[in-house]
Image (cartoon, rainbow, N blue to C red; front, side):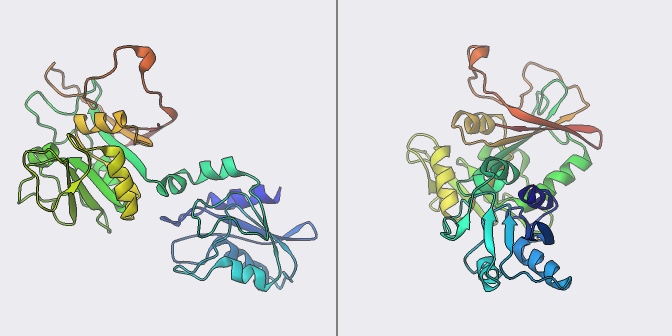
Length: 325
């Protein structure tokens, strides 16, 4: 009952890059304070709940605090919540163990009580501690990403492109292939914060618009590779190794906006957690017009990769499908 309310409150939170957290304080079976983490840098859910109870004149000493995620115990942008909780001698019950080892495993707390629910609520946060990777794709209703001549501007509508620019600001990095850079010369800018650009491959033009704040990735046996290239793999870029190296650099949320071959490689290497697919009400046609996913492909339907948790929404004149992989 009380943990359920904490999770309900967490649904209101928007604290990226921090996880969504809700908290309630209970004394004698009655909720006397509640709160959630509204924005990054603002008080955490536990502090919001404490302040709510105190503002109502409630005595919180010795009460029980139910938190959807294990309370933080280290200084960050805000002081650790465990200090404030212990100041009032409250018992801690938490729903989800924090994947951040700095905060997890507190000896005087009870939990986790709802680990699966908590991981689902904060899936991106949990994946981020490894590295969360999403692919954004846009196609016509007949599955094409460009015409037979390679013209692709624009398949999706302005509202969809604006949404993608907003997404970029919430990701640590945007990944593209060198071919996309040569063909489209994209800026890959966000609204507000601009992500790091990850360029896969060689022969990147020196005047490319996305080279500022970029990491060019190559392999050991590449014929032409930049002196400052990040080497991942021997004969081709090993995307699993790259994912690990990016996470080590603190780049733990990656949006792939490449062409069909990079999309295929990302799926082949098994690094993809989510797919965003925009479908525009256009018909392109042509056997030489590219689709959204290239590569060799599978030989039998039984070997097809499964997607789950489909979500559909309308963005301008486009349809947006979201899938977990």
